[in-house]
Length: 243
Image 1 (cartoon, rainbow, N blue to C red):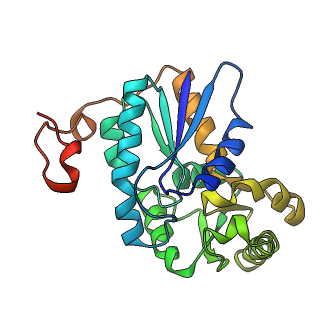
Image 2: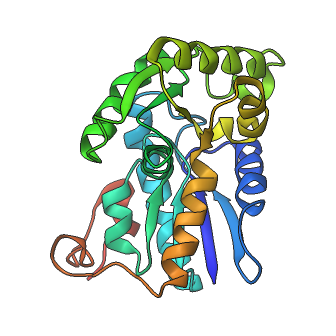
Image 3: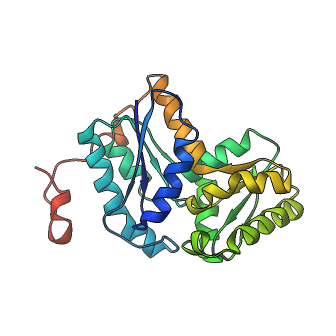
């Protein structure tokens, strides 16, 4: 089995962290690699960033299909380009926000999300609605740590931990979902500190993909998620066209 984890931003150091956390949970016989998008923003913290990240993400999915990859993880909490990636891929494509929140919904009456900047809260709200998880999500909180500071600022771990602790207290939640792939390596420490389940979406999505492939399940390929119609593209996106 081959799983590819795609970091839709262009920061290789973050991909390295993501890869370590994904490798820690895969089973024997699963080959996992993590790739960094070749084009797009250094971090994804706005709707504009998310839109600009999608071509690089889709290029990585297309390359994975040529390489025989069985399933994919989109390692950004906005789950950017998820529908388009599912059109391109033969196997399952799982975003870390969906995987993290669905996992948390199994562990208690409700969960909190702790994300990075306040401006990303709205996107997380939209995703809870898309996935039908509004009744489980008791609150979404920003720790106010920029994405790239998660790996660079020595205070980031403490700030994120305290934000998680405060979220549990404010919401009365049973679990916390970490709202950024760059927080993946903080998960175990925060869980030990605050005493409730803390879910890293990278690990949750990786195991979801592994489980689906093990069960022999692929996307149906019918209707909306059939491969996109062949047609030429122009300009900067000319290489994305076909036919």
